[in-house]
Length: 474
Ligand SMILES: Cc1cc2nc3c(=O)[nH]c(=O)nc-3n(C[C@H](O)[C@H](O)[C@H](O)COP(=O)(O)OP(=O)(O)OC[C@H]3O[C@@H](n4cnc5c(N)ncnc54)[C@H](O)[C@@H]3O)c2cc1C
Image (cartoon, rainbow, N blue to C red; front, top):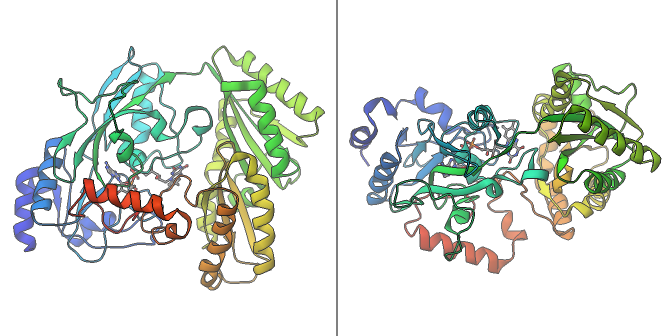
């Protein structure tokens, strides 16, 4: 493919200022957030309308050129990074950035794929509603990327992940056709639609391998009138699970977050961000609990206090600090949210984003910790995550005195121990980040062959030319 011909053709669709061809302008689109993957591209194209996306896909399909969709490029599995062939066309969605409609009767918001998650939350807030998806990357990630990776985050316990929040999508297929709109041109955002296979749910979590999501209609919720956050020290993850069971029974839907943080993780946040844990002394494990209340602050406080009293009586917590202000609540959340970046600042570590049934989390932690400590004496385990969803970020760092890069040579052996243990506990090797390039090979060991074969058949039926984000997922 002659690059200058390609650029001229693409410029005719989106305008010359929106086809990036020089290396400097392309660079941010060609490396992933963790800087583990770098590729090259024939062009990076920035369409601003669904019809433009459709025309670009047509153009690529006619020439059998691979397409890599990209939102905020915050994904953690290399899903939005092209390979090194230099043939790929990266379709970056950041100019598809309009909130199309907020409908308070439908209780929904319709936005284009490149709308930042934080902008969607703000649009909902300004309309007096809550859009509850919340991730530490919300200032940079897009709703299209959230749906394509079926993002989770901190509100899943109460509201579900991106898939559960989605009522409808508009998408461009691998043939360049636009699907998902009703006869009136609007995204079909129905709460009930039993008309055969659920195509929307195929595109969600497909990591751009089936087509490009161009817009979506998402559920809205009432805004809570009050929120209260506490950090409670627990004797162990096993006891944390008992506390979760108690909290779910007492609080029901008011329980909106239940996150596990280890002291090691908090130590890293303190070292790299200067944020101190609010406890007077160190505790190996703590949980961050958030209650959202439909009445008022006093009601929320009473609910939390009765949980804490009962938890103390049952010896489920050893210490607790309740946030006294919105500011302090934010500070507690920052302790949790800065963990990933503090770990990155500390040096390389071997990361896992795993899920097991909630009831088996403690068994998983105990047995996997023991296996790793016996195979790699002194290794450091930094475990934290969405305990209420059965989702842990289970990270393994080098023993003291061992250089992180030197320890990295054990990556495959560490992954094998952790992921075999996940499988033994009935879990998934990717809870919320997806497979992308990172886990494409590894999934073959853990996903039943029949299920992988069905996924390949779906891919071949929907993208027969194999041009949609090749080399990812399958
Ligand atoms: C600090 C930090 C914290 C994070 N925390 C969480 C967390 O708590 N929970 C969680 O789930 N994730 C988390 N992530 C991962 C990441 O932010 C999410 O996966 C996010 O949903 C990706 O959105 P994006 O717009 O950046 O997508 P990108 O990274 O651009 O793309 C992700 C995948 O989706 C595809 N894609 C993007 N847009 C489209 C589209 N419109 N149509 C079709 N395919 C598309 C890409 O090809 C790629 O395969 C975190 C990341 C960081 C950096």
